Length: 123
Image 1 (cartoon, rainbow, N blue to C red):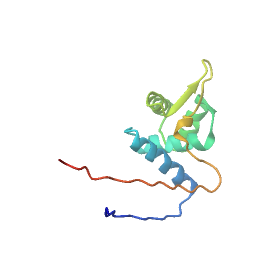
Image 2 (cartoon, rainbow, N blue to C red; image 1 turned 135 degrees about the vertical axis):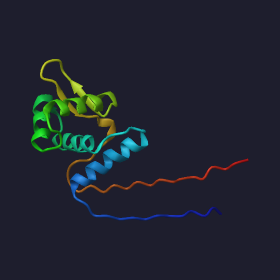
Image 3 (cartoon, rainbow, N blue to C red; image 1 turned 60 degrees about the vertical axis):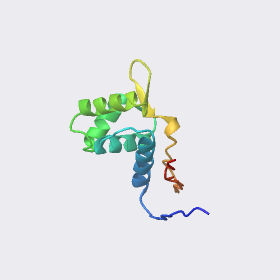
Image 4 (cartoon, helix red, strand yellow; image 1 turned 120 degrees about the horizontal axis):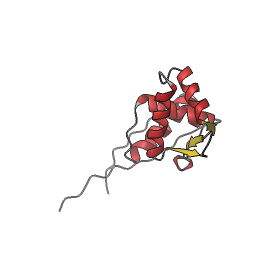
C-alpha cells in the first residue's frame, strides 16, 4: 500500500482573491508567466466580463493597476497572445477573459482542487 503525504488547507477569502487564485492556478498548470499587475488586470476583466477595450484600459488605469492606458493596452495584447484574453471586433474592440479558463466570478465560490504529486519511479 502506497503512503501518501496529504496537505489539507482551508481558507476563507474574499471574491477578488478567489478570482486571482483561479487565474494563477490556470497559468501555473499551463506554464504561463504573468506579473502581479497582469494578474490584477485579468481579475478585473473577469469581474466585469465583456467590455470595450478603450473603456477597460482607462478603468484599470483609474484603479492604479497601470500608470497609463497604453500600459494596460500592452498588457491586454500580451495576455491575448497567451490566449488568456479574447479580442472581438474590428472597430471598438470588445475584450473578455477566455472561457476555457473557467473562472467563477459571482456568488459563493468553493475551489476544490485535488492534486497528486507522484514521485517518479526510476528503474
